[in-house]
Amino acid sequence: MNIISICVAAVVSSVFAVLLKKQNAEYSLILSICGITLIVTYLISSVVIAITDIKEIFSNSSLSLSYLEILLKCVGICFITEFTCDCCKDASQNALSYAVLLSGRLCVLITSLPLFKEFLSLALNITVGAV
Image 1 (cartoon, helix red, strand yellow):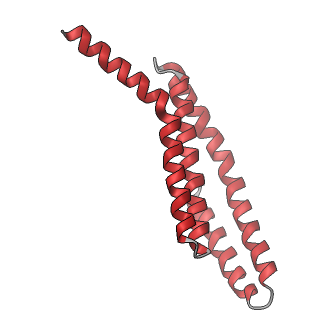
Image 2 (image 1 turned 135 degrees about the vertical axis):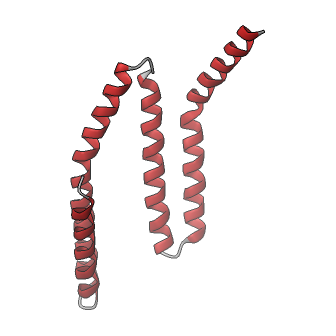
Image 3 (image 1 turned 45 degrees about the vertical axis):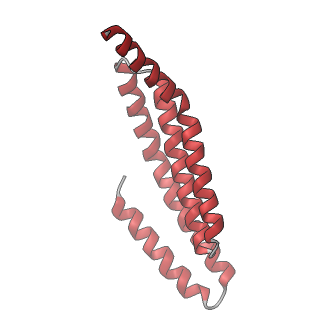
């Protein structure tokens, strides 16, 4: 992943979108969406490679792949929540942004409950074994 390419694409898209906004706001929005799509498409290939590497690490260790699944779901929830909150804030909808943020936090908590149960069970087994 080349962050310089991503930043250059973002800056170029932003500059052209701002210049175009004065003449035609709709085309400015389309240009921004195209810039976002280009960056996300570029990132997806890098993310797929990273996830493959992480799966391999988990496969070679004694850790369960269900832990990785929970981790990736939580990270995805965080990214989506942050993006949505930023969009709501840009639209001057701070209360809606806070509601989305609270929802994202609760979703992460609910998604990670099986992991908490597993750790609690492990801690109780260690405690019982020590007594």
